[in-house]
Length: 631
Ligand SMILES: Cc1cc2nc3c(=O)[nH]c(=O)nc-3n(C[C@H](O)[C@H](O)[C@H](O)COP(=O)(O)OP(=O)(O)OC[C@H]3O[C@@H](n4cnc5c(N)ncnc54)[C@H](O)[C@@H]3O)c2cc1C
Ligand SMILES: *[C@@H]1O[C@H](CO)[C@@H](O)[C@H](O)[C@H]1NC(C)=O
Ligand SMILES: *[C@@H]1O[C@H](CO)[C@@H](O)[C@H](O)[C@H]1NC(C)=O
Ligand SMILES: *[C@@H]1O[C@H](CO)[C@@H](O)[C@H](O)[C@H]1NC(C)=O
Ligand SMILES: *[C@@H]1O[C@H](CO)[C@@H](O)[C@H](O)[C@H]1NC(C)=O
Ligand SMILES: *[C@@H]1O[C@H](CO)[C@@H](O)[C@H](O)[C@H]1NC(C)=O
Ligand SMILES: *[C@@H]1O[C@H](CO)[C@@H](O)[C@H](O)[C@H]1NC(C)=O
Image 1 (cartoon, rainbow, N blue to C red):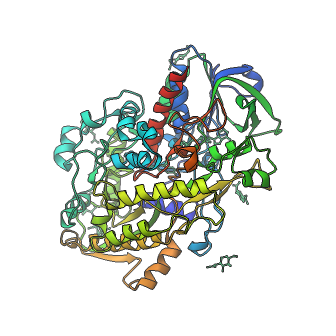
Image 2 (image 1 turned 30 degrees about the vertical axis):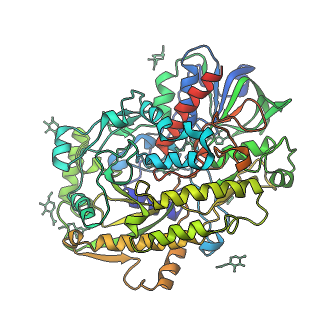
């Protein structure tokens, strides 16, 4: 399993099926625009993008498209051509000899409210970033998920509300509607006009096969009062039950990811340079203006070199590393910088604060009277498996084409918990904002959390914002994903290893309301599997199991099993006014310096109720438009 720990394996096994390992070596092909060492670079570039991930390559593609500016992307990961990255179907999420190099090796600090467990901080480390290794679930949040950022940050940030983002969501992908057979057989619906229309070669599509048990689960939500069915989720209506596409190219059913859409497709541009296998240590400033970036090779002698920047450095190193690069550049909380021996350029308390991620645990059942065919027949019935492989090999159709899942419920708190939901929102509202934050937290960050808290309360009370994600594809069980934690974590420099990985603390369940919410979600999962519609499958709970019944037993079980991350970290360079602890303004420029901006998921002040790759592409598109408009 390489560096993927047990938790992540569990997440994968739940969202997807784990198939056999694929075994192929990476190879490298070089073109004039791919640079092997800093000596091959220009002395300076108009734009330097730090991090060739999901958002970073999107920005670089757009900034280089006119041909007028020289653009350099510096990426710590390798340009990895392993087929394991592209595989879906029987070899989806396979591991090979270079798999380990595609992930960072970071563990959180022990989570004191989770029995001191540490969890793996799993993020992509390869050209393409996390989009090269993710689960390819390709949904978007509800309109309110993005509006909430402007509710918290104020009207100067209105351009980051859903209406301001939707054009970039649309631009960022090519959507492939389900064909007529899929619409008729499975009831798939979509709204091209409201949600899509772009032609960027990042593909969004549905699998041509859905399991019959899924149809029963789909119907079972009619037994849940208040659960709405949406024609489309990606137009801002991501609350209720709806079809979710995958970031898969339907022409050959391979992973569609940022490297293919924003680098391979345009790599002949002579003004678009890529330096893989190199780390950006920091940005050097001169008189408060970005002057150059300091680069260290990943392999060989760790010798530093500097490349100049003329217009702007765009940080797209992701939620875990963007704040680290800012801190190493002397931009961050004074106490963190001083502990690490870094000279303070800008005392900016919000850098690395406000880490959020979805919580996840799983419930497992047996369906004693399942319909056929069902997923377990791929393992237990060799003639069924042979037939499935034949369909896959011939036409990329059949059961093996269903490797990710295409449906989910995203439910509001009032639907999840009609009895206690209102009281949970009241509890959050009544809290003193400082009560569960670190004792010595800067007052601007406390004020910022107070503003976020008001926005969260509004979402917890709304029927148009989801607090639970419940993906289903016919498997006997589900992931239970808590979408709106009130706890806030940190990503700070390691004072004894400033150039190493940062210290990541989710501060999971530091706000006790999060445990209350998680308990309610388990209650919902059990209610769902006991609905009259689901009863026809004769579900028998395997995990947690009937013996986990009392409040104390449920709590103890959650503390043993809950993960504070479903690998959707956000928020460590938040869009907020500086007096509310923000790091970037609506123009994405970092406060207190000139010429440094942020374009990745770290800017999301509040965690949206969705998987987060679609947002990274939209942020990349919008950031590029903003950066261009400055010139
Ligand atoms: C295992 C996994 C499964 C996931 N499943 C899904 C899913 O099914 N659906 C979904 O929508 N989302 C999923 N996500 C989340 C989603 O992929 C990410 O939220 C999104 O891709 C993040 O985009 P980003 O641009 O912010 O960062 P990234 O794409 O992570 O890009 C950051 C890049 O910066 C590079 N970098 C970092 N530091 C430096 C440095 N100092 N110098 C140079 N380069 C640096 C990194 O190597 C990386 O390539 C998953 C993520 C993971 C890890
Ligand atoms: C990951 O990090 C841990 C602790 O820092 C170290 O012991 C381990 O060897 C690393 N693993 C890999 C594969 O680099
Ligand atoms: C967690 O670790 C701390 C510090 O080592 C210790 O005081 C505490 O008792 C531990 N908690 C649990 C639940 O093990
Ligand atoms: C890039 O240029 C090479 C060599 O001229 C050519 O073979 C290739 O098709 C071009 N690729 C793209 C994507 O235009
Ligand atoms: C799937 O169907 C087979 C054959 O009818 C049955 O034995 C099995 O229990 C079913 N699988 C599940 C997960 O219920
Ligand atoms: C195996 O699957 C086939 C369909 O491909 C089905 O007809 C047969 O009954 C299954 N066998 C068992 C033992 O479930
Ligand atoms: C593949 O598709 C073709 C064209 O639709 C069809 O004729 C053929 O039977 C399919 N093959 C399999 C194995 O389903």
